[in-house]
Length: 344
Image 1: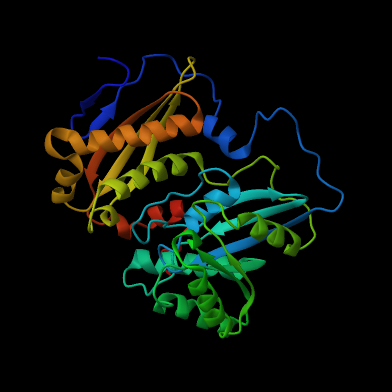
Image 2 (image 1 turned 90 degrees about the vertical axis):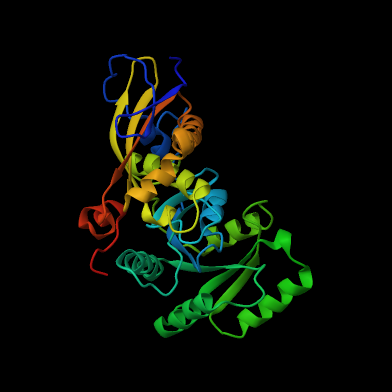
């Protein structure tokens, strides 16, 4: 079997092969990726640094994660066309001049019905409460301001918080419609400044960056200047695989899944072997993820492995297993791993 071939595992899932090489001693490649270790030179702190938190809030699928990745300059938060992809708070660290900008990508804010949804929305509001600046992101291609966004505006009013307005996806809408939207939002009285951007193409981002950098409070940087995020390495790898599930599955199935990284083993040849479990709630969902003859799980595994290989700049051997755990969404340990409040 070649290095890139897959074979079914005993429980019917697909696993990537890995070379039988002894593990190297404790060199954590993902921590280096996230922390920026290995940079050629250390950047000295400026004489007058600025640092602060910027909460990106908005309705589901407004483009918060795409914007975060664009502002940081690297993929930190997973993205899919489906709503409610982001489950936990994700911190992205960006630099602009003498300012260190700590972007908090929050789950979309909507009316929650289940425990996990309540915890996600609570995390989003906590991110907004703690932030130095709040930026409300809105998908400008919508025909009207949706109820979820109006609810966010009303709650910010109640809290006495001012906010920035970011109209996203301007590459897909006429200029006159953008001006109408800006005027409509201005009527709510909480927005101090309005920015029109395309997180996908990068249009308008430089102006947003410069404004935010100048608006942050004076203070020392909280992270090394090359660090990209504070996300734990196992969670980062699990999130990449969960993104592929959202991209390849439909209806309720991706929402019924979660991914855990069970083991992380590095080898002297520079490669890494990652073993993950995809938990589902029912046997029928397991069959859907497996696909005919294991075709779908193989496709998910290949897509995830390729992205992790690109992200880590070294070979990745990914082993995926599927297990049924009916009540995984009621497991307090899961919430702790995501940084969510189980009792929200």
